[in-house]
Length: 388
Ligand SMILES: *Cc1c(COP(=O)(O)O)cnc(C)c1O
Image 1 (tube, rainbow, N blue to C red):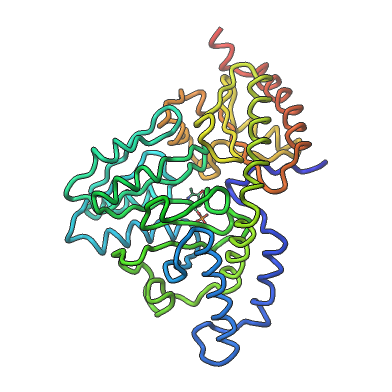
Image 2 (spheres, rainbow, N blue to C red; image 1 turned 30 degrees about the horizontal axis):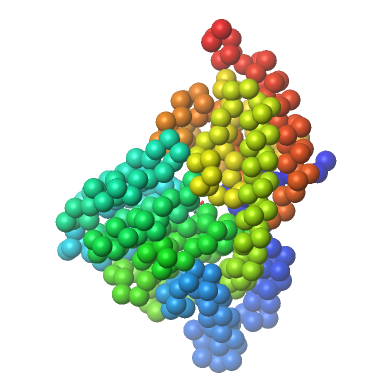
C-alpha cells in the first residue's frame, strides 16, 4: 500500500540534496568553527555560507541571522530576549490567541515573572485585526508577537499592516514564520518586522535547527550563555551539519517556492472542494483564500478526529487531528476554540497538509477513502444518535 503523507505542517522529510550537502560535515569536515586551523575554518566557512542563504531567503543581512536549535528556541529567544533587555522601558507584551505553544507558553512564563500579556482575539477566519493591535498598545508595550501563518488552520496574518503600526509606535515586532519561510515570500523589510523565527524541518531541512532573524539595532538579551558564538548572541558550538542543511533547504526553497506554491494551492483547493462535496456537514476551518498553499483543515460533525485519523492510518494516509501537539490533551485545539468552532466540531477536525511529494493521485485516493471512513464512523456515532 502506498503511504500518503499529509502532515507536512508537523514536519517535512529532508530533501535528498539537503542530506547530501550535510553528510561531509559529520565526519570529514568535522572541525569546530571556532578553531583557527584549516579544519575549523572550513566549518566556519560552511556556516557563513549557510547564513548567507538563510538571509537571502528573507531579505536580511547575513549578520542579522542567528542559528538556533529550532523554531521553539527562536520564539523563546525572541520573547525572553526582548523582555529581559527592555524591562526598564516597559512590561507589556501583545500577542494573539492562536499562536504556536512556543510563543503562548513563553508569554505565560513571562507573565509569572511580572510581565503583562494581552492575547488578541481573531475573527472566524482566524485573522487578527491590525486595529486591535493599535488599540492594545500602551506606553508600557515592549513587544508585539503575531505569527505569520497559523500551523493548524493555515490563515496568513496581515503582518505588513501590523508592521506599519508597530514601526510608527516604535515597538519591536516579532513574527513566527516557521510555517511560511520557504513556502510563501517572507521579506523582513516588506513585513516591517524586527524578529523572525524559522525552523529547518518545516522546509525540507533537518530537525533540531532553526534561525532567528534579529534586525540590526534590536535590543535583545542573550538567552544561552557559555560561549562567544553567533556574535555573542547564542552560545554553544554550532550545529554545523544542521546549519549547512538549513542553508541548502533555504536555497532550494528560494528557487522552487513560486512554482511549488501554485501547484500546492491547486491541489489544496481540489482536496478541500472534494471533501466538502462528499462529506455532509463538513466545514472548512480558516480563511478561504488567505491561507497556506498546502493547508486544508476541516471539521466533521458527530465524529471524532482521532477515530478518523486512526482509520485513515489503516489506509496508509497520514493526517493530523488539529495539531500534533494536542494529541495528549483532552482539550479542543486553542486555535479552533478561538475561531469559534463548536466543541464537538473542534474534536471532529482533521488537518491535511500537502507538500513537495504530494501528487494529484494522492488527493484522488484521499477523496476516495475519506467518505467511506466518514460514513462508517457516522453509522457508529453515539453523538449522532443523541442528536436525533
Ligand atoms: C513547528 C512550529 C514551531 C516549532 O518549531 P520546532 O523547530 O519544531 O521547534 C513553532 N511555530 C510554528 C508555527 C510551528 O509550526
